[in-house]
Length: 525
Image 1: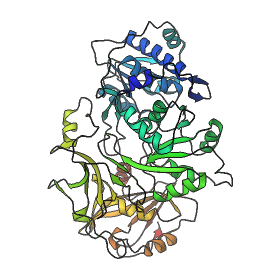
Image 2 (image 1 turned 180 degrees about the vertical axis):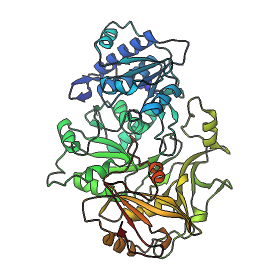
Image 3 (image 1 turned 120 degrees about the horizontal axis):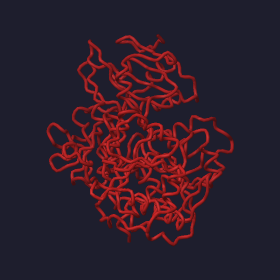
Image 4 (image 1 turned 90 degrees about the vertical axis):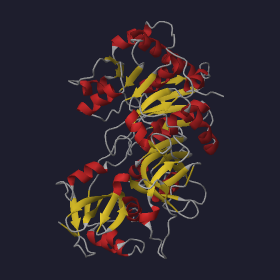
């Protein structure tokens, strides 16, 4: 059994099954990996062997990106996935931080680099005639190294929802490790077609999508995510499997439902961070299986939904996953609930998700011992995510460590409030966060995107919240911002830090509703 991506892909070098399906053409696995070897040889011919062999890729979800990923495996060098939604100095900082000595880009992204200080980094435009000529004249491939299982395959930047993105070293072993359980879960074979519309520079697409194709021999459809073209793409390419991260299911469900939506080849969707309602509605509407799990970008804490997972829970953790108080470094108390299902011991039960067994599959951030040490304390991995666990071991997310709110002397977290708001059919997306209040400390604020299913009005929201028996009076949002979209990362995670920075305000094209300090009635400002 292959222990590395390099070994796994080498096993497919003579496979004449379909590997890539795209509007620009179709590749067999034999053709795909032959192209990857030529790109690897071209890169190594231009590289400085005395420097870190890090090759950046600033590309979209295209065959070129898939070829670049496989080239790193074939050439025995590290591919750095550069977030193509980053701009300006942030983009330049990522490229420099990853020590990229070569950057592969294309005409679509080349102008993003204009005027930026990339350090000593060569840039190649893969859509140019010059690059095509270099690849055509590539020498025979002599790999830079033969990677071991724990050697880095790629540098994958974190989403950056709570600060600057950090480059995680994604080990070679992870692709062959992640694929087989998904193949078994969904019955994936070489006859399947994997729809890859999540950014291929991020671990979610690699460990939820690419790994499935690489381990099964199934075909890949690289695509740019679009809610409006999703179903037509699935039908046109015959896609049977997809992966997602963040809110894509919600975006797709916001499109008008049609009587024949279930007439499609999609059998399975795997991802994380979808709400219970979105999971159920997507499965019903498109007649497909949806399996949602939890995994940090660092892959040190993994939680999966099992049969019988209660509403609101993300499932049960892999061995070693626990919830700890970071101040006392002790395990938190089991969550207790009142007769209405409201958490009554949040101060004792809510803590940080940790891996008590150690780093799991996390091999550290590249060239950042300080941040790696911050994650690895007391021999455990600390995820930065808050949660609580009930008496049966089911885990519930409560937000990030920055999502604590202190409201009139009571500690609250955003996660439980968000789950309650998501019960309202008129609400499509939600983000809950605190804004400063000189009287109560933090005022609860909610940013909502209407679903379009029902009218979302101040009166309807007031009536809905009044009916939620498990909602603490202090957890009622004081401010509600109604928007057509919320700021998000390339991996569809809401950027709460941007919302927090704007405080209790709304843009000109948005609405801001407020209620009196002790009131339960919302009014538009």
